[in-house]
Image (tube, rainbow, N blue to C red; front, side, top):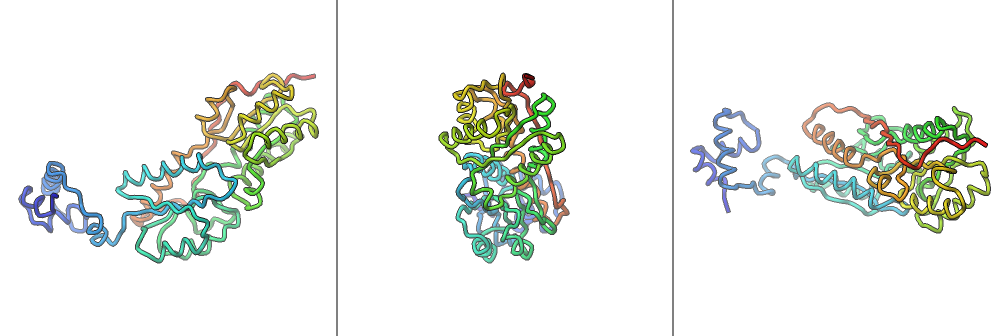
Length: 336
């Protein structure tokens, strides 16, 4: 195993100079730095993680707090997690994934140890009980999601309210006057999960502005539940011609259910969704959708955290604007 003394001998400098080149704690000339870096590359030297942590007072580990509660769509959550891990590695950090529903106790347990330098917190609720602790911790944090009161916090997410509005406005431009939102499972709304509530706010606001008849329905993540919701909608809103779906798991089963009930997509019913582009574009009927930018959100969350660790100023709120792609599932309403 290559040691720091081997690098120093190869570069013709002292071991302390190699340490300064790695840590940046003291200035060294650019020529010396380049010589040390060339020796590191040639010898294949890798700093020992424990020694590096002791030298820098950092663990080079981030915590990703994502409680796997009922009603969340795990494949989408894992897209965020992969993005966070990949970006963290580019910054020479590893990620500790915390999936248990431990609330404040779990955060405090991690924060009170030297396990992690900082935290990224997901599955944010409007009135999240973790907020007072996050505001009081010395370790920096970034939330993927916006609570109702975000002052003193660093938050990033898709602008879900604007996404809900964009879907309704698209349907309204096509002439649809009776619309419905098929959203997350009931427990997601019971928890007041922020992103789901924001979509409802945007959907309702846009429908009211456009004087559209509208309704909101939660839906369990199963084909049977999708069929029940489709039947309920056609029973309660027989003039329905536009649907917004914010529930990845039931998007295709819901389209299938409507078609089995006699509505063709998009000839009789236009469908929009808020979901990952790769899902929307690969369905039997490609769906007009607002992309869920998990890779961008995860990357930017880590970058915000890196700046905070370096004591740089970052914006408290980062809202990514919705990006809609029109596909085959929407068309102008057939007027009677």
